[in-house]
Image 1 (cartoon, rainbow, N blue to C red):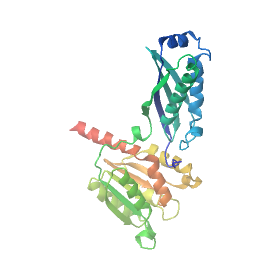
Image 2: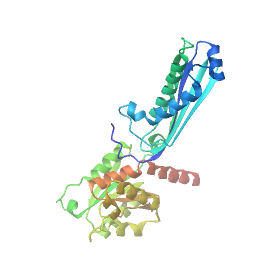
Image 3: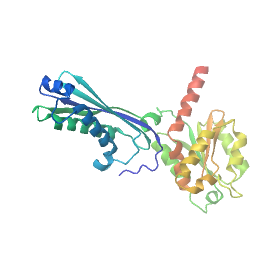
Image 4: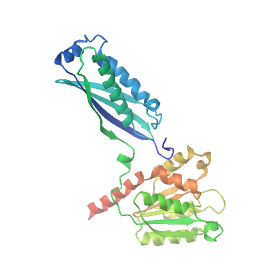
Length: 305
């Protein structure tokens, strides 16, 4: 199966449709009058659909087992067709469109099985996804924001050449996959004044986003939060909490990190852990959703003009 451990939980919804076409209106009457020999077609097929949705991962090899938190099955009769709609909801890392389509398919097959003794011309004409909601399709649109981005590596060992930077490079790589170009990449030692001067220069150059990696731990030389916090006009605790919560699900040491996020003017400054895994997971935790901030800022500035 595809690795989804890096994804975040969001509310996911999907609605799928299947259509069962019968050969005679007498079949429709039998369904409505509940005189089909095998039983109540609507109710039996609905139950089959509910079981199918919950057991999708047992039938489709690459589907992940997930918590189904809502399922609804509806039948609509129009002329010689029965329209089946299956709605599924969950709060999880991956979508439920296959679960909805699997449910609709089994509802239709159950109806076919129950109707075939009285109607040899029953057919399933289509199974399709009507719509889905949640995940990247809703929270991952950056709409070509054209941001001016800088990555700063704060590390004594990297700046002295004793250690190779990996965290800053993986941040840049992940930003590239989101359609963002890193225009500036700089390495500085763990010095408060040096880091502050670097950030002030980038803010004066009207950078939209500055990401610092390193110096957020609790060793005597980890002073990135002390350097950043005095510069910020507004901190964003929600993003800081999201980063730590995401990390804590993956390692108990995440609670020891002091990630800091906030605005100086219209520049978003994010201080992330210096470890490669910590930096990578922090980006996964809040991007691309965090880019919504720039729509707010740019929209506000446009309105002011």
